[in-house]
Image 1 (tube, helix red, strand yellow):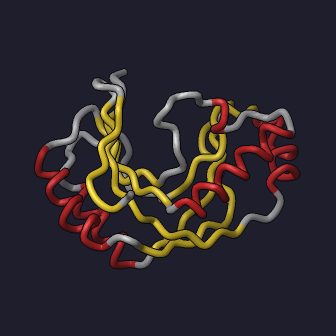
Image 2 (cartoon, rainbow, N blue to C red):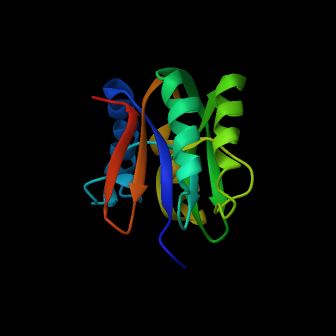
Length: 169
């Protein structure tokens, strides 16, 4: 399977710190955590689209439709469990309908996208054994975050780096 390119929305510094604190809670409980991902580009984010490649049209639409909207407010609450035997644990992210419409306008520009539909979320841990889910719930407790998504970036796995398309610094 090819490594996937992605477009991502990133929270501001306060949002990053809040999500990293959740990652740390999992690590402190000796559970899998996104802190285990040691890549220099690892950062809390909401994926807009993932695919083997991103057409220029998708990048253009993303810059206009999403980049021009930043920053956007979001709320994150409610844990998601995605997968089968080993699961991904994520935090559900709620966005205004206008943001969702704009994301969908980007996604339709990518015919070979990895996932149908869009489930906005922040990944907290991957490859968690189902038997460990009660410990995950105990470690995280009730989670509610108010976020400001301030940057749109592109991850290019072939070149091994990210490019900010809008917002940020």
